[in-house]
Image (cartoon, rainbow, N blue to C red; front, side):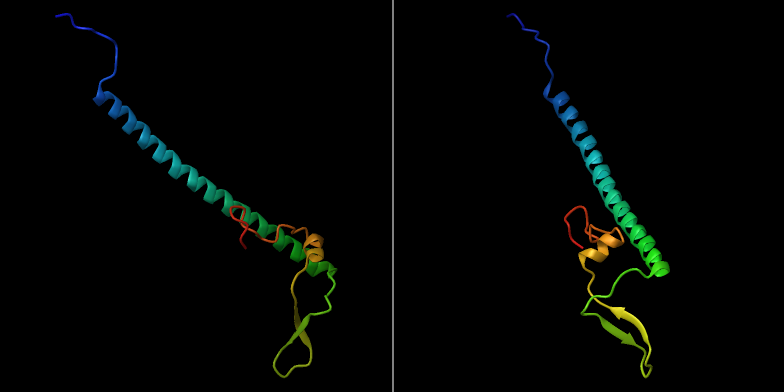
Length: 110
């Protein structure tokens, strides 16, 4: 009886290779998801720094106008205004160069 000796991989060798590839892909996926989380956090930090810088410029220049529907906040029993509250609209966000509205880059949530 003649035995055919074709070069081929055994089943055990294929299972070992597939297992190694699976382990490496799992490590890569975890590293990649951590990288994406870091990138989103970095983007949020950049947005907050930009907003903080813009508000500091506002504090020195006082150049943002108050809208018509603002609310005056006063201390209890005092007549002087200590703050104003209103919804920020797109003109103000463009003035302080904060046009993405603080959205998460992953899913556009605030």
